[in-house]
Length: 354
Image (cartoon, rainbow, N blue to C red; front, side):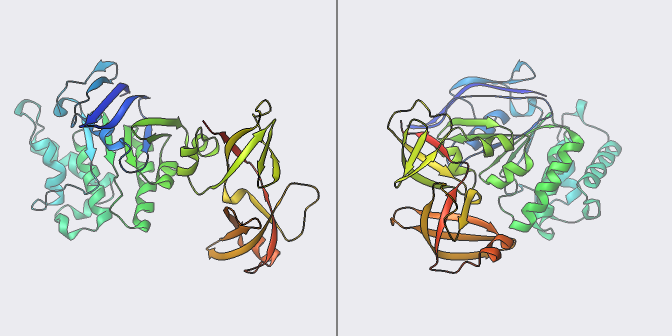
């Protein structure tokens, strides 16, 4: 089922949680709402579910206005961060709950409920836990049961609010992959809220980056990471070096070093911010031809698995620069703390000051 969000506004007192938000989610798509705490992403999810009422705007499910529909009439499954399972019910009864509380005329028979619950428990690979109680399960198992319960009522839309937020890093990673595989199997239109960039980029078909109640950018994970439309998106999606700069006729001046930048050939002497990802910082021990370079000193070295992260102090004592090298390149360079090096930034992206 497709979802259309039109010009949604929502205030809480003087605080503007959502400010004229519009978004289309095609049928069968898995979309991530990504942004920092307090940006409005959970409020938007709750409005889609019918748990909050917008001050203005409308929500349409498959072309039909659902803005004033009750939660139970929206055919939405909701998964919360903290499981919201009934502690006094077995896993089986938790999953069956939504079916058992249906009005008599739409309630399945006991045999049908049993069949459907066991089918869902198999789908989430936890059929063997049917007789256990939630306190006897691990966090990851509880979240999968919560998802099975949301799917039991055969929702047309699945909404997930920070579904893995309460889990440790290893379990989160496993469940992310599992959710992606499950979605590819079921193709239910799904929207999930997260503040974890890696989670959004790994799981979603499309990422919606939200900041201060407004949508900053919508695109595939690759698009938003490779082509951020604003400094906020650039900084929010992964580590980045930021430099104060001046741009004049296609050249960005950073601390006396001039770098060619795209799309600013006609710009005349404007203040700007330049951004470079740590993996786009090239390091050499000696000057590499005439290419523009920064002189710097290696101030910190930190090896993490296959990568080595470096902090470098520019010779002019201004911004600290972060670089990321493979272990192989690091060994090849033979770098040590306190060593003088030359830095060559690649893929510099410039945003003019407003």
